[in-house]
Structure formats: structure tokens, C-alpha cells
Image (cartoon, rainbow, N blue to C red):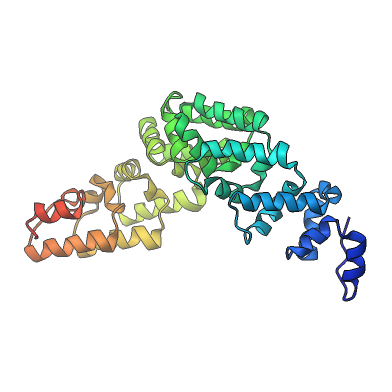
Length: 338
């Protein structure tokens, strides 16, 4: 069912013939003919959907908190929503999602991010997913947050995808009854990556630069996002940059283990300015940063530069950890800077 572009003078006659059709529903809400045709190609069921049903589903989405200006984008991503039964599909899923959230706008935000969640079955997909996360150690109160944060999880196969990732994490030494649950709570998006194409190569790269199994376990527990970054595009360049700066292999291991984001931070905007300030302004050695990897975590201007200037005026010399590892109130009291 392809829609011919509208011509002037055709609106009234076509409207009389197709007043109840889905194409007029879309046109009334500002969709152009190209977008309508693309949605009809992707969802053949729309051809038999009457305007009244589409309007009812549209209004329901508005009633649960999705802003009308966002609805065209939501429907474009998943036009099937307009063909789903309101009482037997949309309402049960929204009610179930509502029991998982704690804030009024969480469900609407979840649906806007991944509208396809409404096309899945509560009994066949959502309930088994909840049980899966509970079984791998995610606390019951946190399971809802994971799904609302990354609703795409409902589209993954538990048997062929999610279980494989849990087994991979277990193979890195993470305990299935607690540690894996904590990793998934902090980074539910890790479940969307391929073990073979992304997670395994990244773990192998970490081993290749000298991290032990224990080091890798610590990295995954503290900042599992490193596992999901591309080795050639991100991790390798950052590693090579640290090498060029003069860090020894063992020092890089210390940096990565102590502050894993160092492998994914922007070289130009984050690493380079901090290393230059450390060596050229503060006149400190690289091994001091290796001994205190959190140096790269602190804001350069608001914390590192400011505190260095305050200490320099007093002629005070101290370690990086003494200078940075406390809030401002404790800092000024410690060094008598009030």
C-alpha cells in the first residue's frame, strides 16, 4: 500500500474515500508521505488499522506521559505500536513497567528510548527477564532500574545472548551470586555487546598489556565500560600514548587497574593537559601519577590547578594524594589555608 504524493485539490475527495484510513491519521499529525510509506513497508499490519484505533493508542501514549512533540519520533521508530491492542498489549506492559519504576516519568522515558518494548509480551519476555536478573544476583529493587535504563534488554535472547555474557563475566573470575549482579547494575548496556566481537578481544588486549587475571577482575568490577570499547580505535591509541609519554609497562598496569577510564578518556582533552600540567608546571615525575592513578579523575582546573596554586603560595610540598584526596574543607584545614 504505497501512498501517492498529495496533489492540490485531491484532499477533499480522497478524504471522503479514505477518511478512516491510517494514512489520513498520519497526515493529520504532520507525517509526510515518504515517512508514511516507509512505516507501511516496515509494518504491513498498519494497512488494516483504522483511524479510530490508531487515535486511541496515540492518545494513550500521551496519557502516560510521552510528550506529543516526541510521539512522531516514537511511532516512526516502532509503527507497530498503533496496530497493537490497547487493552491486551499496551496497557498490561505499561502497568508492569510502572511497578518497576520509582519516578513518575521513568516509564514514559523508557518507552521513548525503546518503543519496541511495548510490542513484547509481559508473560513471555518481561517476566523471564526479571527472573534472569534476580538469578544472577541483581537485588530485586534494582532490577527495574536496569530495564528502565536499558529497555532494549527485553529484545535479547536470554539463552543465546544474556547467558553467554554472564558466563563470560564468570570466566573472568566474577562471582555469579554477587559480583556479576553489581556489574550489571552499574552498566546494564554491557549486555548489548557481542562476547566474540567485543568483550573477549578487549579482555585479551588487557592481558596483552600486562594485566593479570586479578587486575582484569578489578577493572571489570570498577569500570566495566572499558570492556565494551573498541581495542583498535580507543584502547590501543590510549595505551600507545601513555607509552610515548614515558610511562613504564608496570606503571601503565597500575594506572589502568587503579583508574580504568584512563584507557577511554580523550587524549587531547583529558590525558594530555593533565600530564603536561603534572610534568611541566608542577615539575613532578610520571611515577607519582602511577602511584596515584586517581590524579586523572580530578578536575584539572577546579581541583588540581587551584590546589597547586594555593599550596605554591605557601611553599607547601606534598604528595598528589595528600593534595587531592579530600574535599575542599578538609584540604584548607589540613594545610592551614583558611
